[in-house]
Image (cartoon, rainbow, N blue to C red; front, side):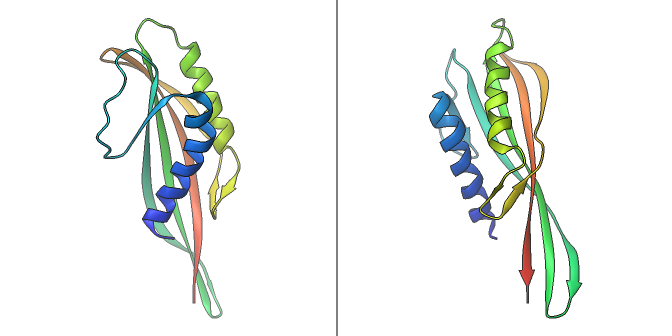
Length: 135
């Protein structure tokens, strides 16, 4: 799987199950948009991880690539964490124990980061892997 195909599959699922259903602004890597001034928003970053040989045998070898999709959820400071945590729950449900386009997601985790300027932030970390058979 190419890096482009990986990112496209993750972003497509995120858009369909989070961005479009929650009407929240989402910033993707290296896009020219600015976050909203006073409303919740999310930054989605896809971190490609290492590729390792998972098995070898016969005429083919399996290579496993791991990675992490990080959804940084931002809410205005002093607005409480309820709305941000509700968004986090939607993200967790969209990426928990599913396989999409050959990418297997495990159990997402939610962790508050705290204050970031005028925003309160929490992250949803969705770890994934995919296998490639090379003959």
